[in-house]
Amino acid sequence: MMKRQGNAYWALLACLGFLVLSCATKSTAYSNIDKAVYENEFEKGVEVLVKEQDSKKPIYPEKNAVLLFLDKGLLEHYAGSNSDSSQDLQEAERLIAEAYTKSISADVMSYIANDNTKEYPGEDFEDIYINVFNALNYYGKGDLEGALVEIRRLTESSGKLNMLNQKYEGKGPNAGEYVLAQLKKIGLSVNPDLPQGKSVNFSNSALARYLSVLFYLGEGKTDDARIEFDQLRAAFASNTNVYTNPIPKSAAEIQTVPRGKARLNVIGFTGLSPVKEEGVFTSGFPFFKYPALQKAEFRLPKFVKRPSVIDRIEVAVEGGDKFDLELLEDMGAVMEETYNARFGNLFFKTYIRVLLKYVAAYITSAVIDEKKGFIWANLSALAAKKAADATEGADIRMSRYLPDKAYIGGVNLNPGTYNIAVHFYSQGNVVASKDYQGVNVKTNTLNLVETINLK
Image (cartoon, rainbow, N blue to C red; front, side, top):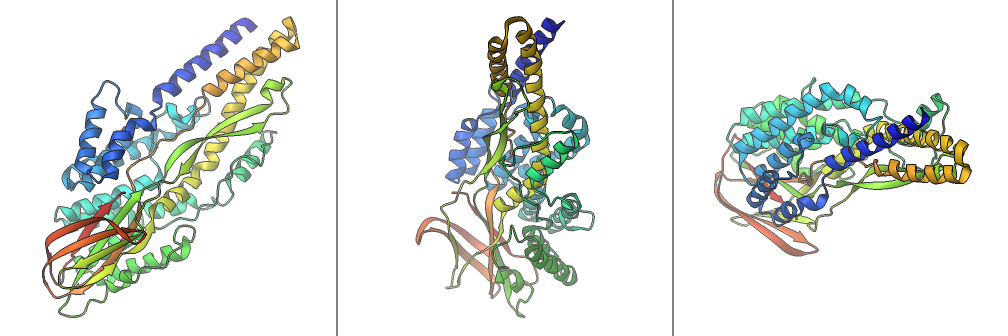
């Protein structure tokens, strides 16, 4: 009987190991896409992504369909393919909603096998920025009403931002405190030196509110625009972990355009967002008899920044007007902040899953102890520990191609057609420039130029 239990244990570990390996995609698989993106060759980036996905070993496995459509949709947006981008981003959003309905059963399974074995459900920040970039897609297609409908999916009373506010309410304790409280309920304790999460302080997006103000003004709905600007200010006031910068002056200026003048608005995106990498942390299980099982490994995601070289963006308008864009939203900070909301639960599941594997190893070793003695049992425990640790792997899946920061700016001009140059600076030197020829700036409408450099 015990022999059969031991065999079943090793078979389970082998199976779990296969599942982990089969779901993992190394970051090096994206290197050719990353290179194209870094060089701002976004059309080439889309082509490489499609080619890699159509190969014998797709870089986005079926379980990562959300990321396939999200990353492809973002690159298409940067390349100016608004219709294709909109279609792919909408599919990513649909899959995120679909994954939510499956989350309960999948969540139970992740106590047995790690999160890599289930469909990727998308992160909260990805769900938010899908609508932001899809709204810009609609504007790029000349559909201001469609852009406003898309942004309302975030900003209306039943929208995603309000849902996030409700979701994060009460998420004050850090991950360590949360895990400690949960484990105490089942008679266990946890090493307080394990990684600590932070309280969640995000319930509003200044970027979404700014676009909402722009789109309402473009439709002539000044009262709605005023309400949304109040929400923008509230975002800065209530989300101090994210918005450490002052409110951009240009955000208020868009509401007070002098009579006879036309407002040119510019929104810029720079850098690449942080990505998750695997961190290995240790904690003690002193209650196990065998020393090999008394030091456990936990593999958890950690955010790693990909800093941009760009520290200033200057817009030069034909005729002499120049202005710098101001930081509106540190999107990377939003991502790290919203991720804290589920870190405690992720930590708890990881702890319990690792503990159960070590318990299984202990049971097998105890049988060997009865027959061959302590030394052989400890060697068995060591081998079982290595096998159990090999089946663990942090779920580091997330979009690789969201920007890191969003900037805004603008100037009031006489109506007319202008050539515009955008200069990207690094430590006082221009590292890239982009020209926009024949920009038609009209009164009583929205004039918005989007500029992107992810270097």
